[in-house]
Amino acid sequence: PSETNGDKTKFREIDDDIDEYEAEPSTEKEARAVELAGKLNTPITLITSADEIGMLPTSRQRHAKGWITSGGEIVIVVPNNTDVADIENTVVHEIVGHDGLEAMIGPERMDEFVSEVYDHAGQGIKKKIDARADKEYSDDIDRMTRQKGGGVFAKADATVEANAKKRDGHYQREATKEYMADMAGEIGDKGFE
Image (cartoon, rainbow, N blue to C red; front, side, top):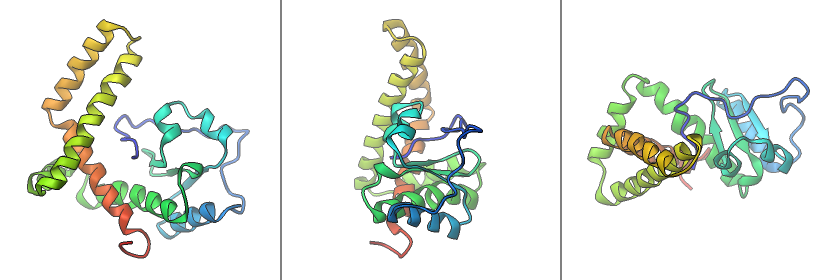
């Protein structure tokens, strides 16, 4: 799954002494990611080595297949994608499923749109979305607890915050967006696989 970028934080800054990936891609997976991003006019950064993965600030980012930054650049963690088809799904998932959908619907109407999608989904799809929402809720409590220094009081405070977000429908909307992005990724570059 890809991480929600709600806080507008970029996951990886390029230092002056590290060149942005511009060299000829050395693997088929890298070449395909660069090709698709080019077709979709989207800047891309490829993370290709264990050292680069180790420099990522969170466990979630180190285990992600990819994400899109607030600036519209996609970041692909190449080793976390199993093959070229997985790379294709990840690139399309991020560009079309997240960025493209929001551009088409408009950020100001996105929450309303995904709520409508959820409301009209079949029970099987709702179960998948609800399971993902429950996991995001739990993960958010764990993340906020760590940010607050850990311990029972930090967890209680994090739970209060997460419960407010849950009552507001935040986790359900985010899980629905992720479900829709997964569907876009499954379409891939050449149609449904």
